[in-house]
Length: 176
Image 1 (cartoon, rainbow, N blue to C red):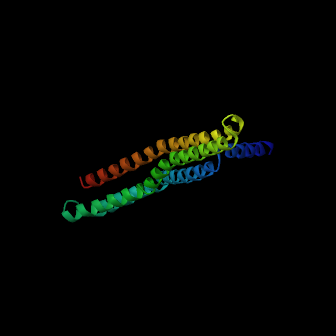
Image 2 (cartoon, rainbow, N blue to C red; image 1 turned 120 degrees about the vertical axis):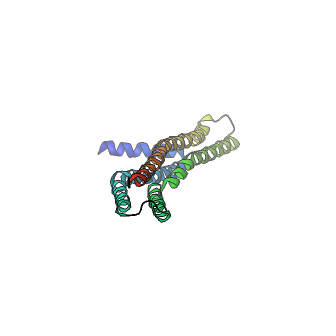
Image 3 (cartoon, rainbow, N blue to C red; image 1 turned 45 degrees about the vertical axis):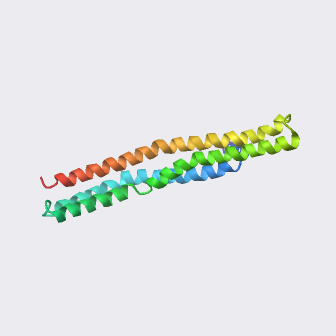
């Protein structure tokens, strides 16, 4: 219980030092991770069933060589690709948004530094330190969030492309 209270106090102090932009970065990061976890769940639980369904639908066809069969195959692969790539663009957008929010925090922190300098002069370093914290902490938080999202979003996109190609290959060779 005491450790939980201490952790909440530490997070609150960190947000106060970094400014309100950290709350936006946290919200974007939470959404980004929620979408990524949903994709991993989809790939692990739903996708294998979908791939089997598509492959069985193709094998159930008697015609695999006509123009019409080729169009059906393209439709099945396109549906698979759409399902696999769902939310990928949203994830990539959120990854790109994180450093921009960090930059917003930098700008708002520097405005605070300039306000302190205008009021108290440049000799009051203690007053300027708060603005410098609000300028650097969101930048760091935005970059950390973006890096964590970038690594996993590339893996998600790579898996989606590889799985689409794998299923497409199975449909090509299903009649042989």
